[in-house]
Length: 110
Image (cartoon, rainbow, N blue to C red; front, side, top):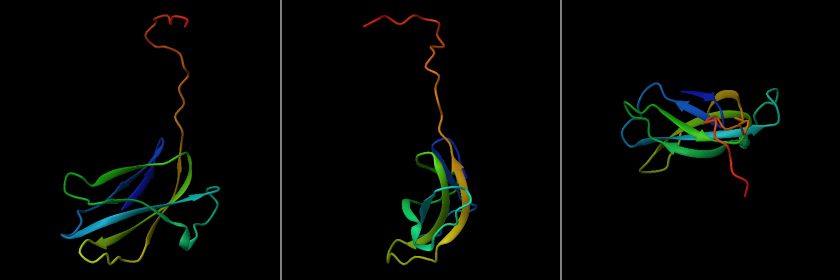
């Protein structure tokens, strides 16, 4: 499993589908900087996703900043979960628009 930061999101990508009856809990922990170490109890659940063949990737939308990513597997029938598995720290960025029209048209005053 990998977590890759992008513009306004973290993309989680699995290397194989989930087993039958199992889903994946995706967790993130915001960090003050890239040098901060994640705290064991600081991760927050952001999504549950079932990785399948042809669908081994999903995005989690978050504000800009540094995030530590983790995941764990959860049995759907019982809620039993594996230990948290940390992935790493990534920086999510913000996309900015310059506000200039690319169509060349003029805007009317209100």
